Amino acid sequence: MSRSWNGSSHRLPPGPKALPLIGNLHQMDLKRPYRTMLQFSKQYGPVYRIQLGWQKMVVLAGYEAVKEALVNQGDAFADRPHVPIFDDQRGGHGEVIPSEE
Image (cartoon, rainbow, N blue to C red; front, side, top):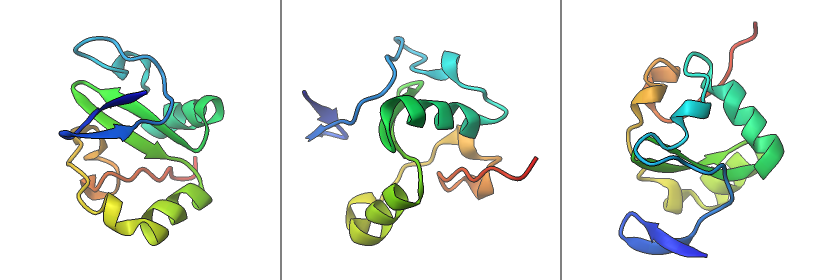
């Protein structure tokens, strides 16, 4: 299935069904989004999509998926947009790394 992704056509990975306007926000633990994302990765695999409000995004879960994207495919992931939900997580650069609890 091909859909619009930032004005161009790309294949999107699988992910949970999003609601109009809010996307997947109703499914997220907003205090600990990494917990929800871990649950999604168990269901949809190490590369999946979510939508937070109007913002569609691809989530990479696990060392191998992150290495493939950032090392082997770095140019394709260079211009990540700002995502406000992650502002409290590691300076707002779009990465979530859980701390030990």
